[in-house]
Image 1: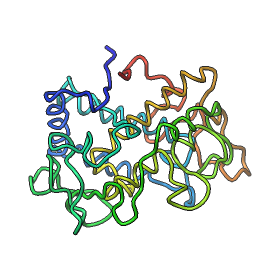
Image 2: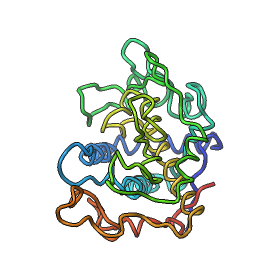
Image 3: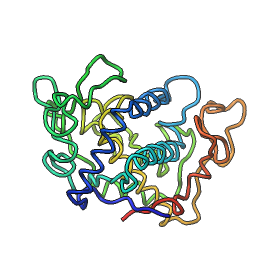
Length: 288
């Protein structure tokens, strides 16, 4: 049966409680940290050698769709009523708006060390210790809005600039691709930070703390953020029904991107699926 992913701001109290409860149970069992480790493993920038599947590459969107889908299935094994909600950061734009409430994700980190001290994922509650990360910090960290150098969340106009592009991606298939929906949504723009951080990337920077590293999955907002990114891919496909994932074929030998990106019908590591198979989610879930 097709299930629905909802805007987090529309969840009832019971839905919020069940979503948080499923997250905490996956953390308790140790399964949650497996997803953190996997994201760290596949966090390969285009300045490094080897295959890029998760970031700075055409497969950014199908890779995270599959990643999110696997995680959602894990949540639903705990509680079949749960789905991953999405955070519309073009509308809920402040540090006190949903999802930064006591009954959902808690709030900002404290100024001294960025430690989250409110909500169910606060370290002092003893149920959300960081065990898989790129530092030794045991507590969840946030710096909502980047207090030392304030940063605004992307706007609906920023998202529209990506969704309006009818081309999925283009050479050189990395963070410098001059056109294409994928790179505009992933958020690699020209110039220097913070102006060059757009859409998806800017949100990671706005949240701060753990969200600014390959260990970003340690913050549960990662899933809500990527559900909204996934929703934009759905909207892009509806607007451009004849557009497809690119590249259709792998770069030829001698091309700088040969062996470094995933083409439409190639396997998307670490799974036995292709980007083509991930283009349509209509038989599994829909967005409210």
